[in-house]
Amino acid sequence: MQTYLVVRRSAWLSERAQEDADARSTAQAARMAGDIICVYSYVLEESDRTLGSFCIVEASSPEAVRRHSAAADLPVDEIVKVAASGVGS
Image (cartoon, rainbow, N blue to C red; front, side, top):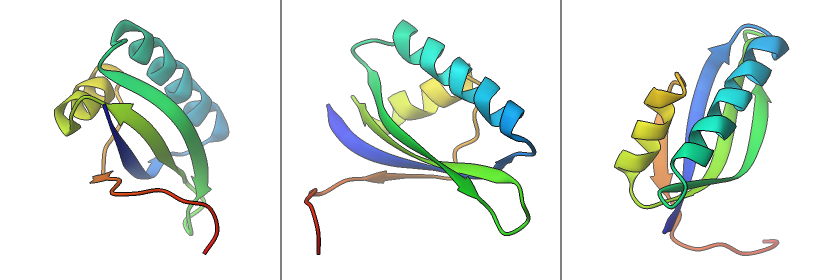
């Protein structure tokens, strides 16, 4: 498993729509156990007042991230492989 950052920009018009998407994501991740683990998500307030997200996932591949997103009806703007992690700067 590799760690990836998944960016979804201006994906939802309301908090309710984002919460529904989160529920779909969680359910789909459970169906794909072994291929993807959703570690943490940040909800972003975009400049146009829509909501986006920045998610940290562990996945078997970028393709697994795309399969998960498609099955949960989630957009994907970018998938970035994490090279290293640390605390502070």
